[in-house]
Amino acid sequence: MKLLWGIFVTAVISTSWGAEVVRVRLHSFNKSVRVSGLGVVAQFNRGSVVPIMIPRLQALKVRLVSVKPIIKWEVSKSKDLGAFVYGGPLQLKGEFLQIDNKWVPSPIYLYPKPQGGIDVIAELDIERYLLGVLPSEMPLSWPMEALKAQAVVARSYALARLDEVQKGQQYHLENNILDQVFKPSEHLQIAPQLKARALRAIRETEGQYLKNKLGSPVKSYYHADCGGRTEVASYVWEGAKGFGTTRDRTCPKSPSGRWRLELTSQQINQALAKYFGPGEVEQISVLSKTPTRRNWLLSVKYKDQPFKKVINSQKLRELLGFMRLKSTHFSVTQHVDRFVFVGLGFGHGVGMCQWGARSQAYQGKSYTSILSHYYPRSRFEDNQLKMTLTAKSRGEKITPLDL
Image 1 (spheres, rainbow, N blue to C red):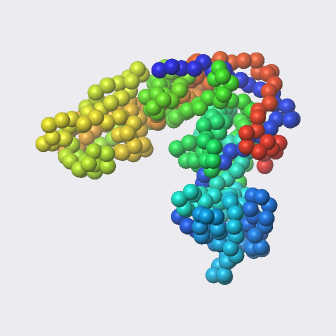
Image 2 (cartoon, rainbow, N blue to C red):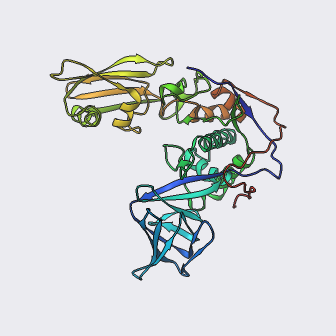
């Protein structure tokens, strides 16, 4: 696999630094959404205000009537006859804003899907976005240097996704494990002292991210527990670029360092039927391993079928459940009517190991040292380097984080 050399850049950001704007998909609905809040106003991106407001904490219904030949929305209060509005994405803003009883940041945007349906998308500058990611991806009670490392890799990942998004795509990131878990910081139940730690980690690393030799942000993957050694990215996602692997003796000390999973033959049959079709699985065995000794390809033998079938170990995790089959670093045995998996680690194993970062931070390592350990093909440059990021979306000035 070809690996690009990277440059880890820290920066003292000038006051003219332009804030990247990220679009995060929070929810997706078929035809209509229920909006509630205080003083809710519906407005087009181009500035025309829909004459429907909610002065009190009441509900508003927004329905997508049509996408072609023109986009048409119906906005109504309760059972009242709604106002029909025409145009593109619809902006909703107000206090205590909720979509189907789920808190969302204000403003929020409703985008029509090309084939019908509604995407609920938040637009945030990247530092505010990180304030919703950091508490969702790492406990805020962990050492500050681990939190700073998490802030840098989360920022780098988000910036890389901005570069990947195709023209015309409505959002950059999902708000779940498909990208990074994001929850609106305004409504997270976080103790003030812990929120202050998140703010500190973000502000003390503001603008810092991993770069490759071409100057582009690195898609800096991370995971909970590597089980002793990190994984090569291309063995998890086809074509993915990584920045080296590393041995890590600190990871087996985590709660997920060693695990065991027992599933009945019926559970295995039902899960694999989604991929291979119905049948009775007799045996699962390892065909090949990755360079870091994780399972790569597995063979599946079915009763009364002459040929074995082959499945990628990551696909098996998906079918059995990522939270159950915690990693691809496992052995599997059959015991009459059940299959027993015994393994190490938790997650895909690529990039920074969060439990390992925690352990290194407790040992007194700095966040830059932690990042150098988990991205060994990167190097650290002068931390006094000044640079300006290009605002790809709107060119907006950075705004202070809301305390």
